[in-house]
Image (cartoon, rainbow, N blue to C red; front, side, top):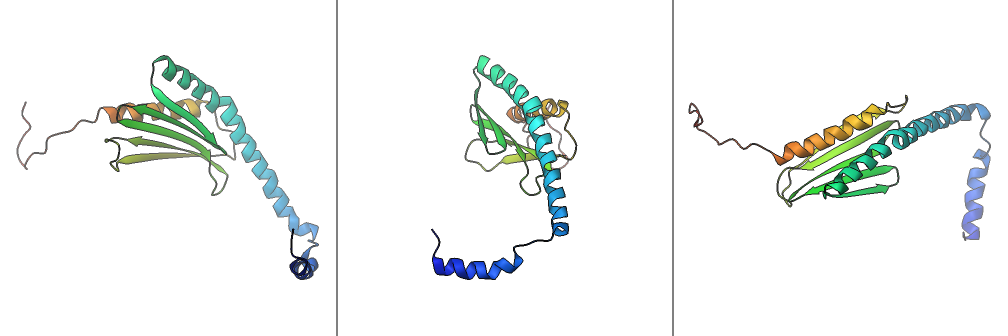
Length: 167
């Protein structure tokens, strides 16, 4: 496993620091307890709100033959909807930067594939308090609305200053 010479050298260096006074660990224990509460708030929000509404969306998309993909990785859930040459993706995750926020990204593409024209709408919620279930429904509706809006972008003709568009 480890080289014996290295192990002896390393243990000789850290052994004097191995015994940490209990008062120095109080803050660490409190932080871990708070983090467990944040993780529980995220877990209950995902299982009680996000997963059921995602299941309803998948059934709707499947029944109407809309191409989609739902994936999970770690603490992240991603829903990707493909429509002809446009797509949209909703990513739900617990932020790794502080692990105290739940955030989701709504990424939509308004131009043909290959063009760099994606938009990222990010919303964040604090996990210190439980998140109401209605948030999952609102965010999913926002995602679907953004996707539908991107399908119908109105292109206005560029007119010289002072001219009016034809009626």
